Structure formats: C-alpha cells, structure tokens
Image 1 (cartoon, rainbow, N blue to C red):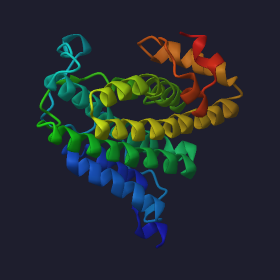
Image 2: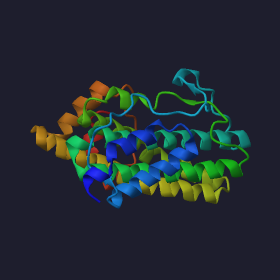
Image 3: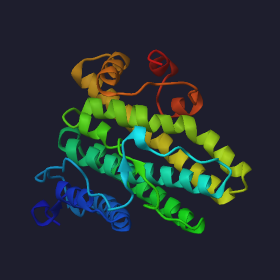
Image 4: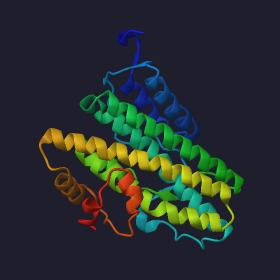
Length: 267
C-alpha cells in the first residue's frame, strides 16, 4: 500500500497513548506493533505525542511519599500489593515505549521505531499476564493506589532522545534487572510457580529492552562525537532524581550491554 494511503505511525501511536482503558490499551499497543511490522503504517510523524497519556479512573495515583506501606510479604494482601505494584510498572512501561517511538522516531529512524514498538507489545503482554494473575488472587488492577511518579522521567526528558535513553531503559528498566531475581525467588518460595514464570519472562524480555536502549544511546553518542559513558553520566546526573544503589545484577546488565564500569562510577 502506498505511504499516502496508510495511517502514519505517529497517529497510530498517539491514539494508543490516549487510550485510558487498560485492556483496550493492551490490545491497541500490540496491534500498532503488529501493523508496523507488517508495513501497514507509514513512516510519517504528523501527529504530536501527548504530554500525558490516558489513564483509567483507578488506580488512584499518589506521590511516592504518600504511598501506603507494603504489607507483610507472605500475607494474601501482601502478595496482592506486590503484583499490583508490578502491574502498574508494566502498564506505565507500555506508554514509555510508545512515547519513545512516537516522539523520537523521526529523528532516530525505522529500526528505532521497530525496537520500541516491540518493547511496547512486550510490556502490554506482561501487563495482561499480571492482570490475569491478580484475578486469580481475587483482585484486579486499580484495586490499590499506585505510584504517580513513573511518568515523570518521560516528561523530564521529552525534548532529548539521549536523555530519555539514558534514564528510562538504562536506569529505570535496568533497575528491574537488579530487583526481579530476588522477587522471583520470594514468589517461588511462597509456592507461586505461575507467578515465578511470569517474572522470569519479564526478566528475559527486560534484558533485551535495556539492550535496545544501550545500543541506540551508543549510536546517539557517536553521532554527537561524545564518549558514551561520559555522556551517560552527565545526563543521568542532570535528569534522574533518584540514586543508583547496589546491589547490581552485573551478569544481566552485561547481557543488556551495560558495562560494570559505567554504572558503578555513579553508584
């Protein structure tokens, strides 16, 4: 189909970002990734990305300091709270990947769009698995309050692809590589083998997601004539409000393209 007869990829991404219903967003994110892969969307960026994505009425979004304390890990409520928190991270991650592709795709090229639309589809699948698991536990997404600060990293870096890559895949998603193995073992020790398999799938996929970010960041640094590690440290210090704290999952980070020298220098 000629490009003039196809919907632009930016318009398709924008529509998914503005979708507020979680299940509809999951289906739409997977569809836009599939349509792009099959050549049904034009490499055209004629639709701006929204400043804020669509959000459902629930969960209530709270500042980090107002989030209720997590209940005892082994209790039923504690298990639900854990999966609800993970589900919210994956739900926001759908929008983070979509915004990456839609906001910076014109600058970065078709391979960049392909990579981050595939990330969005993965995150949508992760969320769907977790939502199904929450239902098995007698709950659902939206039943508890959730962290309001996850989108702030995207808003903070909306004008700079290097900063977005430095902070979102290479800091926030990389942190998931550090904490997921221990969570997986706790879930397995509690007898939740289905949950452990979900977390293993997420961990495997997140290694690839971080690698996409690291590879594209290296390309940007090269284009700017900057030293990769030095540029990353400058951008993280400028745009990331938290701290990088050990322990680090060095093997998973290395598999994702993050050298130990890179992040240990700012921990």
